[in-house]
Length: 223
Image (cartoon, rainbow, N blue to C red; front, side, top):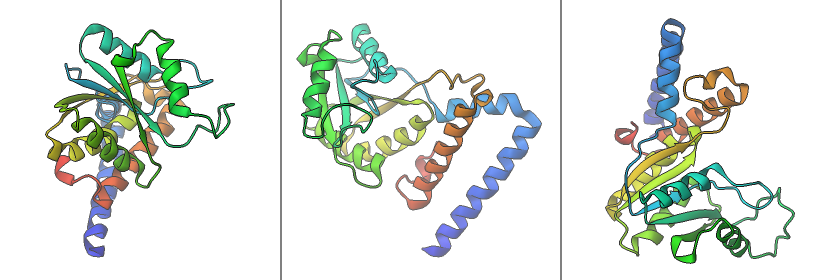
């Protein structure tokens, strides 16, 4: 097992060196394609939209939530599945004993959504977080005979989330479509010109490599 991991890391490091060389030679085009790879935006119709990584309470309206509402209004999905982690965000003014899902429900309803338009799935914090999240969410929605879902996530995090959800969804026979919601520092034609965009891209590439090395996502699905 250790030998296999060693060779995987050698392959990843070699690939990174080749990528750096290619960037130096064909920079602009490769950087655009790299951004599109890490932030896929394939739009399709589906039964539900899974909203991953939404921020609520004192944060303003989240871009993922806005995009999800747009999909619902346009008829591309029938319902939104809002994913919450089991801890209350530390940057909110709410006390830890508050009903966080209940507060989020009220906040979403103030945006015009009815109770039938969305559901909330609370996910425990357990490493690896994205894998645990996918297992809990897909187990929950499979009980409603969901067969397709658009996965909305933030920017460059989308590729890893998509691969994990796609893998976990296989036994449930649920088709996953990725849709990255970009921040102001992540325009796909110039993300590298923003320090925050460069940092976020590198962080997500490293995390994706970690998931592949640990076997959380099979290499055959890493495209």
